[in-house]
Structure formats: C-alpha cells, structure tokens
Image 1: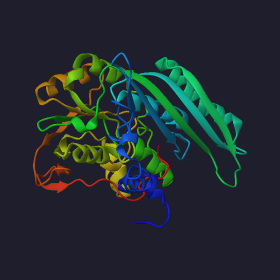
Image 2: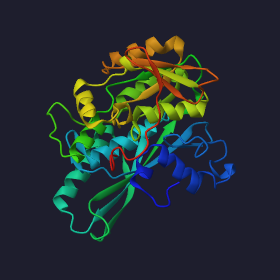
Image 3: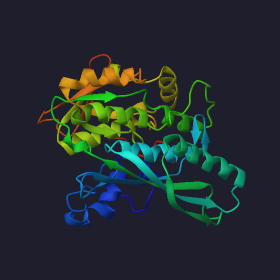
Amino acid sequence: MEKKITLAHGAGGLETSEILERLIFRKIPYRLKRTEKGYGLDILDDGAAILLPDGKYFIVSTDSYTVKPLFFPGGNIGSLAACGSINDILMMGAKPIAMLDNIIVSEGFPIKKLEIIIDSFINILERENIPLINGDFKVLPNDNFDGVILVTTAIGIADKIIIDRELKPGDKIIVTDYIGDHGTVILALQNEIDIDNKLKSDVKPLTNLMLPIFQKFSNHIHAARDPTRGGLAMTLNDWAKDSNTTILIYEEKIPIRKIVSAYTNMLGIDPLHLASEGVAVLGVDDERAEDILNFIKSIGFKNAKIIGKVEDNEKYNGLVILESKIGGLRILEPPTGTLVPRIC
C-alpha cells in the first residue's frame, strides 16, 4: 500500500475503498457503525438511516465538493453541491427536507465569483423548496489552498429505505439517462481541450424522478444510486460485492452520447468510469422492470434503458461482467488510479 496519500485515494475508486478500510472501517466495532435498528457504516450507502419512534427513518448524508474547474458548462461547484446532496438523500428512498452547508474559501478569492457560486447553490434549494438551516464559513491562507470547497449535509425522511445490498438474482438494472456527461466535461477542461457546445454537465436534482418512482413502485426498488465518483463501473461493482451476486450488463444497451464516446475515446478513458450528476441507477424486480422503465420514460426520462440483470453465479459472484457489442465477455473492473482529480 502507498506510504503517502495520493490523489487516487480521493478519486472514488478502489484506492478510496482501501484507504477508508485501513483508516476507519476496520477500526470501528460493528456496534458503533450504526444506531440501534438503523444503518450507517455497516452498509456504506449514500447516507445513514436512524429509526424514528413512528417507524419512519431519518436519513442524513454528508459530502464535500472540490471540483476543478469551479465553473463548467452546465453548472458550477455551487449547483453541483446542492444537487449532489439532494440526490444522495433520494437514493436512500427519502424525501429531502433540509440542508446544511460549510463554505471553505481561500484568502484572496474574488467575492463576486463566490457570490455566483453560492447563488447557484441557493437557487437549487429554492427550486426544490429545501430549507438551508445551518452552516459555517472558513477562510484559509492562500499559500495552503486555492479555491473553494463546499461541504454539505442533507437530511430527509423515508417511510421505507433502499439498501443497495438487497439486490437479488433476477433483478434488472436500469439506467435513467446518458452516463458520463459530467466526468467528460471536467476531464476535457482539465486537459485544456475545447468543449463542443453540445457537451455539458448533466448536473441536476432527481426529485422529479425518484419521488414519483417511490410513490408507485416502492416495494420493487432493491437498489438505487447516482453514479458519481467512479461512475457506473464503481456503482455496479459495489452492488455485486455487497449483495454477493453477479451483475451482467450489455454494452450495447448502455446509453452514452456519441459526443461523450468521441471525447473519451480521444482521451483513452472508459466512460463507464466517469461521473454522472443527473442519473440514477436502479436495481428493480424482474416482473415490474418494464413497467418501471415505461413509467420513467413517461415522466420525461426518454433515454432510460434496462442495461443488464443480476445473477447467482458462484464462479463470478461479487463481480460485474460486461458483454461487448460483438458478444465477448470481460470483467468490468472498478476504476483505479487518478482518472479525474477534483471532479465532484
């Protein structure tokens, strides 16, 4: 293992899992990884769940946003932070009800730029009718840090929570929109490549997607995640490992924009490793998969696809298998190394 922290440790891939296991997860006894009858570090989902006296769950999720550049086609770090935290709450099966924020900015940063960032953050909360109830503001010397970091904590309430390790053989995997848009934009900008005006981040809150799905199909959703750091590949690998199943996906079914494929081919990056900020990945009952897919399309997500299924294959349980467009099979590994530093 590395003797020093590298950027790869924060990229959301295999190295992130390894350093967290070393520093935190293996040192905390199981009884301290969650509250009584709740869920926390024992499941490593998008947030934690605390059981309330009335049988509902209080959901809390915290995250930090360090994207570089701070401004990008389709948004900025402010809108990214608001949408990211809202979506993490939604993926646990909860309705977001409040937000807290911590703003860390470097000495000398232009106030006007900071105001634009915070306005973008607030505008998302206003549109979603989510109160901002507390926060903090810190300034660091510019010889230690250059830019802005936003740390958010979102809370929500769920009647029934979604735990990603509840996938079972036969379940289908649905992707609700094109993948890799956000990661491709950031990667191109960091490599100083001109961005086509058709390419922009997909950052958006998924309230108008997830809440209707919960209302209609709550008993048929077995896993849900927004594939941010580590992309679709990391999401599916986590699910396969946590549920001890094999996930088979079909390359030809995965919705990827042609322009995203063009940029990622040029850069030598697998789009399945890149972050999406306005997409949900769902594991759903086989018997209702087509109904759920048609419903998702009917509420405006026309690019949604069933991209694969869950199997019980003793030889490959814990792994993700990708069937290529020409019919070959390969193991889809989780991302490693530093794909896109400071992406979300």
